[in-house]
Image (cartoon, helix red, strand yellow):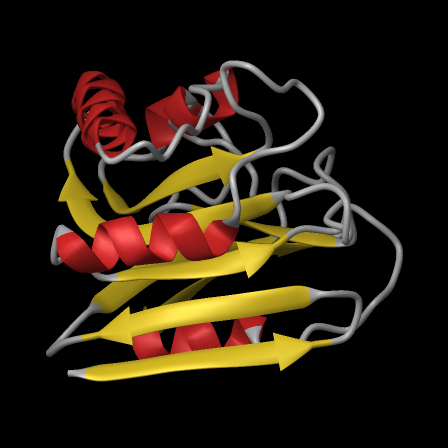
Length: 178
């Protein structure tokens, strides 16, 4: 088991836990979210994905994104995603605070206690006063319905540990660009 915390500028941090074989097949797109046809498949180990997010380049928002699995054909539509390799929790807000989420370290500690592999990275909107992050959890999900059920289950388990992440619609959108 390996744990690491990597701090980088603008109070961003990435937290990762890796155990064993975590191959993830994602579809990567360059350009903004209207570019839904020019992607490529890329396989990652969870640890490699964590390293990638630990070296961010500050730049404009919406210059590239990924989809949680392999799109076939390479066009971002729900019907083109047969299964997902990744669940994404969007730490954008809590049920009580629409401007900020709970601290990412609280999420990390709770997921660690739950024995769930994960990567946490802060988003473009994260700041010292506003927690904005994403949690990547490797898991095989076979349908949009299973995604919603899995997201709800993890959020309920986190809330039982006093970790409040509000369930925003993007978490449950099958071919959501991240």
